[in-house]
Amino acid sequence: MQQDAVVEAIAALTRRALSHPKGAPDELIFTVQALKASVETIPPLPVTVAQTQNPNQARSRLAEELRHIGLSPAPVLSLLYGVTAMRGAILLDADTLRRLEPDQERGVRASCMDWPGPRAERKEHALEALCLASKVAHCPWIVGELCISDDPDYTTGYFASCQRGYVRIPHIKEPNSPRGGRIFLYRGRQEDVGACIRWLESRPILVDMR
Ligand code: PML
Ligand code: MG
Figure 1: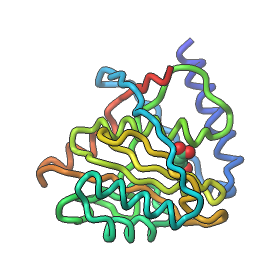
Figure 2: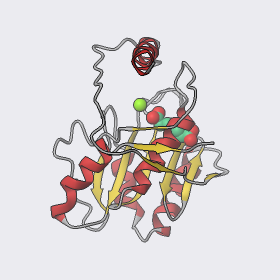
Figure 3: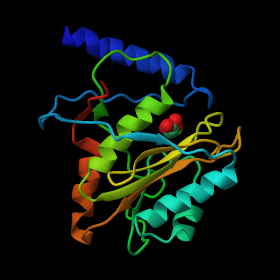
Figure 4: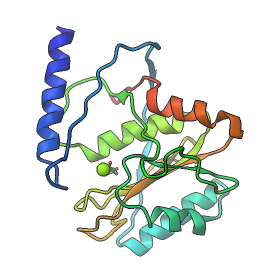
């Protein structure tokens, strides 16, 4: 039964990758691992929707969210709006503004999270992002996350943190823009960066979306 579910999940992911709006993939890589740690179940972040009508308003809203968590927006936003084509997120020290990813081309990929229940065949941007953002906000060293989708035709982004919840931000970029990426804001000791990255990449989390 579980084996059938693994086969079906890989088939569904393959179909999805082959019909991605960014075109045909160069390669598909799947990793199937037995879990070593127990799975933690967490609630999703509460969702609100900003009333932004265009990219300027969206950028101002992101700035406002950064100020709420005590950060100066300009350097964080210029980094976010400069990102294209990273597989993972930028891990940014919220206090020193130093980038902490060991490989800056790849970034840090939040992974190993899911929600129980059926899945649509095509990418469900908002649900998948809420699942990821809920895991990331739950990470002990992360104080906030900013996201612009790198899918050219998807123009809703978000800011997320435990304090502010999941704030959807419509019209964050112009349609057909290749721009997009994520920033995870880190607060902690330099010697804990490795533990934070392992937590984001491999701690198994279920987000109870019901
Ligand atoms: C939303 O609709 O709530 C934001 C979704 C962001 C999707 C990011 C991505 O493409 O991975
Ligand atoms: Mg993407």
